[in-house]
Length: 370
Image 1 (cartoon, rainbow, N blue to C red):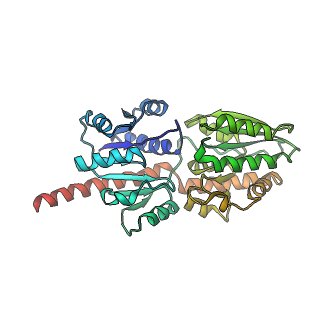
Image 2: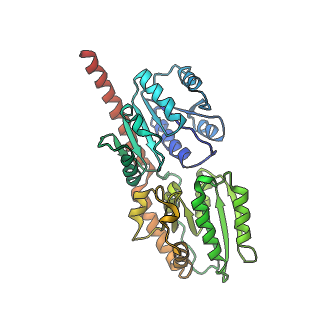
Image 3: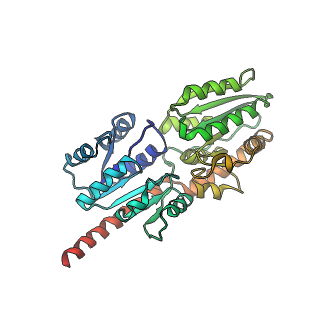
């Protein structure tokens, strides 16, 4: 099978990148011929280091983007794209060469799907909640919709470290992009830091993993909040694979959105889920289903949905009785390993590819016979 992935992005790293990376590596390991159409940079190099073929484009001009793909002279069997300029190129390629087309939606941006839904063969969402939202925007009972969530790599996220309840030093991690579209997460985190000013019986190290256009401003604000407390900020920037896993394992409590919640839970960490659109809270018995449904904060109304005092209460639940850190860590670990194993998730995606390709072959034969 010859697979073409298309994605356009501004940030050098993020959940979109990891979604494509997981699929591309899995498909290559299954001996399929995988190409990714993207701009030159760190992510492109990371793919090539794993043996994934890349096609370079900046998506600025559709004609040049199509030419870059056509110059490979590859007869692709399936095209898998994501919203944005990459979607436009994918629609052209799918129509011109009669190739089945899949598009994945990650949140509340549907990229005018209703204008081209008839030209798409499968519409994938990363959670049931995202799917319901996308459906509501196109007002259709189409059977093209599928849910294929983000996942964690079980070959990387297998360790489970137990928290030492007698220790007086704690590490709390924030894992997110530091960009404008994540501002709700950053504002909630600053509320959390303000609350930590009152926790002076032990030292808290705050690890910030991720980067973005708001990095300098955000770090300065965080350090100002913790000034004159025993606590400190450590900034790590972008991490991937084993370095990222070790960063999760190094934390006792994690605050994160989306797929970072899944990776944190797979690492056995009590996780406070706050996405770019909604605060879900500390993943526990009473909200984990909502978190799974919602892609851990992927859609919602930000502070209009937020109940004042929630982040403080979630932190107190863990910090005031440290036994809860291990209990919630094990709870999270169980959910992640039952619902979000990437190997099983990618098997489902592969099956969808195979069905669409065979269906397209039958469709072409039927049209020929007519």
